[in-house]
Length: 255
Image 1 (spheres, helix red, strand yellow):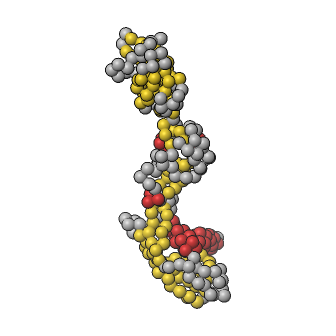
Image 2 (cartoon, rainbow, N blue to C red):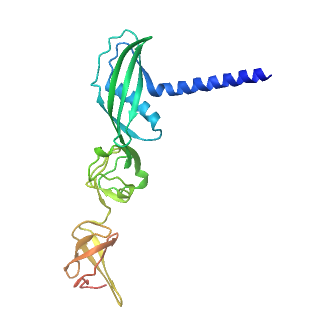
Image 3 (tube, rainbow, N blue to C red):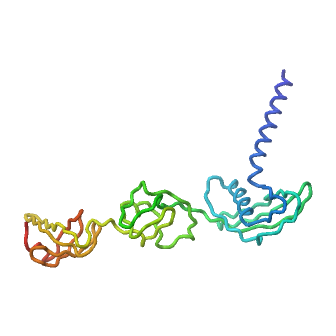
């Protein structure tokens, strides 16, 4: 009975070892079909899988600097290409490795490879087309991973920079947006009739005016009092509502 238990334990250990080897294999080796050139995409995918196994759960972009690709492949048989001697400098993001090509049982080549990794950041983009003047909601957004060096100083990286804003122009989904693509949602539109509000302790005045420009919440706009034709400036405090408060800014004709 004891011998049987030992035999079962050995079989289980062997199965676990073989399973682990099979799981590790694809991360460090891939098959190049007969006659198919060794391309940059094939090599990047192979190295990316090997490096991902070294840093699981980390999103990164791989920039391949060597070898110079594509390389012709005149082998009449499939080539098994494995990644060996993989080294990664976490501080600089640079990596090096050796690509080992084997055809059957014969070593065909040892090819140095190297480049660098760049950690990706997540940022919001539109999940659907948005028309000019349309307000952007949280449900309109999705997240993508992007290398920081692909972004501009004006690129919008936070959902809060988009939610509640208004598209300046028609915007397409999936594209990194910049500050020039959106603006504060316009609560006041040029030419619209607005309520002029003047509230001070002991004094509350109301009048109607015509907006001379567009304005979002908290922005300054020029208005003309409809009764006095007086030119005034106020702060947008709500839909078609402008608060006055500066010197000489009381509506001439209160209501």
